[in-house]
Length: 288
View 1 (tube, rainbow, N blue to C red):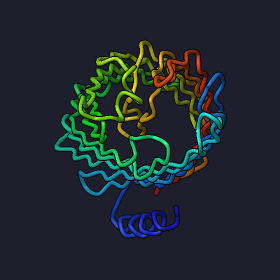
View 2 (view 1 turned 30 degrees about the horizontal axis):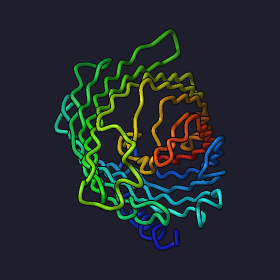
View 3 (view 1 turned 180 degrees about the vertical axis):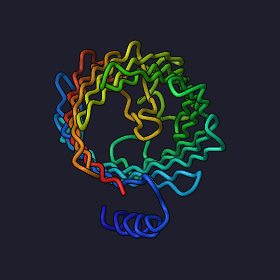
């Protein structure tokens, strides 16, 4: 299945490469392990993408597919899903840039979020070389409910001798709106709260060819858009803790990174608390 998405993505990357600068292609693989879950045991996710710059415009596209071994019963089959993410950005000048986002759950064989569509848009204002501000809103349309999310991100860059550091704060406001006329909603998302607010603090350090990053999220969230529109948590899980750490190294045009992420959640349909989700992620990024 993934071949039909890789081929056009590779061809478009080749065509843009003729005149683009600072563009890249990337691939990642994730291994997931669930503890205390009544639905999932373990799983894997794979993704491939391109980040193409042409003049003042940026085109970023990612295709992702994955799956998980489920607990049977109560589940009747293992999970399979496919997603696609796209962002268009345009930089008007050194200070002002806009972004338009699109994502879709192309397939999910166990959740009613199958076929969900996400749209979004926002802007970045750069005050100076150290400080930047981004505001982006997302609207997610599922058959049985909708999600409205607003992200406020502040980036601050500084330097300690030869070490470049970027600190980031992110605040997410999430509204979950159930469709009262749907028969499926009460069985899937009815235990979700109508409003969530969660805040993240991130840090990324860069020394010569080495990279180190860490992040922590405070507060609860459900059905959230993550990673600037390139991850969507569309299963009925309410997360209340997230810790992440990662490191990497640059080899010429190639950047290789490894990340570990731990999340704690409640499975909403059955109010199953203290579910642990451990994710190990490997990422390769090639610049041209």
